[in-house]
Image (tube, helix red, strand yellow):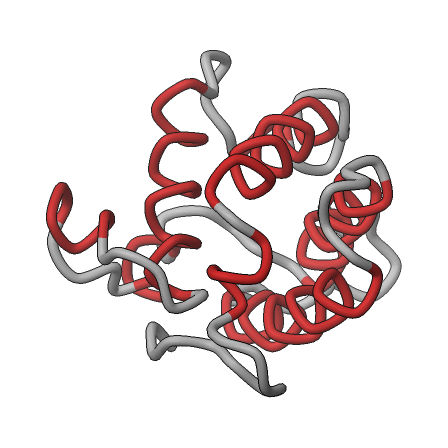
Amino acid sequence: MTAPLSLTTGGSLYDRIGPEALAELVSRFYDFVAREPLLTPIFPADLTLTAEKQLAFLSGFLGGPPLYHERFGHPRLRARHLPFPITPARAQAWLACMRAALDATPAISAADGQELFTALSRVAAHMVNTPAQAGAADA
């Protein structure tokens, strides 16, 4: 899940988005996460380090420098997320925050944003580790 992402021509998605726009996206994304009731229980109150890790991960994931690997080792995404109950509804809430952040980041083109969102949709589905419970709120 950490291979450089480039589904279209014109360089890596990282090259097309650029580090500044990616940093803007991550900042906006965590502004939305901090206000999402389904997500706040599984995130720390201070999202500073979480945002740094996300930016570092996305850098390498999109074909840029392998910042996450350099600072934290292999991402092991699923293993690192296993301690947190990630339900289908939480995965969808996470994606909704990303969609809102992409929409609020005009420096990222619609095509590049859609490419990123499609890739992250697959990642979000892979992170689900807790099934929805029938008749209960899917937290």
